[in-house]
Length: 420
Image 1 (tube, rainbow, N blue to C red):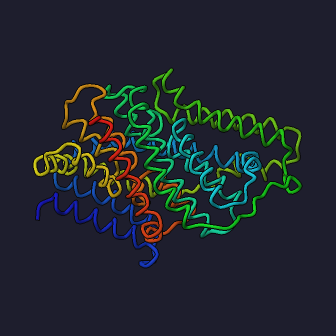
Image 2: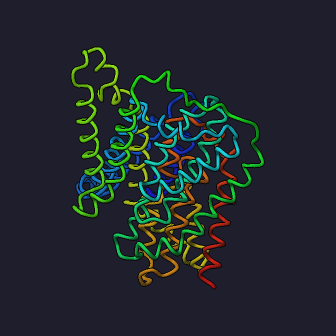
Image 3: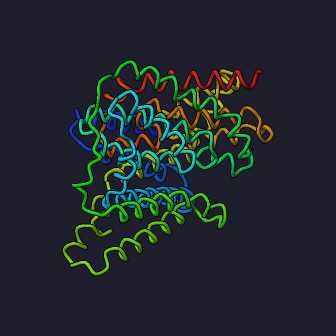
């Protein structure tokens, strides 16, 4: 058996462990870590160990570390805002109790917010907001599924909204105004179709929490922390554009600013009060297992990329199918199973189309939205999975098919636009 087949087999076994974590009785983070480290170990024992370890240390690890630090910073900011009840400021503005109206407000809020921030941060922010609005876990998971679709759809049409769109933008294969003009309608349809369907599946009212009497912080504190926190998130792409430093640097700078302001607000309070609402308390609430899970998944995908398996897969698709639109559509479907970053990287290496060609726009759309079909197919999905403890099978049954029809509808719109 070749090393490629062994690597694929181990990845599949790890993937099965992630899917059936509850039935097998272990955490998905454990399966992801074993898979990620195991794949790199096999590569070391079956190749040039020096070259492979250098590739991991110099290429893969910095990329993973940057993503994890970005995630850690985003989670910290969200936890600080949540600790100071900042999301209550937004929640108090949403006064509707009708489920259908609420899900439309939440969906489009996530859609446009993810274009300004990114789909991962948006998912984290929206889940914190949902916890303020909805008590029932089953209802909240349904809304969370729409948030994943909305965050990924909103991120696809903006050069700052999704990492794969950013990759295409940085490499000069798309321009900011062009991607926004060409993909916005397809992305909107990608959300609109499942949103219409789910509207007919829900009914009734949800009590909203807008009463100030239970708040521990005055309105000016809640508003200040919310504005500074969201401002720090919005500042990240601006910081990257100005300095060209990695995004996590801007995110950690934002953490530092918010931390400083929080300490100044707490100045003069007794030690017990400070401890209850300190940044240390927010850090203690960070979902570390989800971060470790992220590391394992990214390491595993990096190993498959290093072994050339993903590149060979993309070439095989090109030879067997031929039609570029169908190939990119299939790549989008694959991104629900395999991380979209190496898939897009392989596409960038395969094709030499000019800037703002339809193919690059279609790659941005498909890679950005196809991951919504499975909950582990996108950073937003993985984050929500960890925050809300959503079961893989539940998502596939309740949300996955909705994401698929939305993805396909948006792809048809993008294709029609290119023909017309």
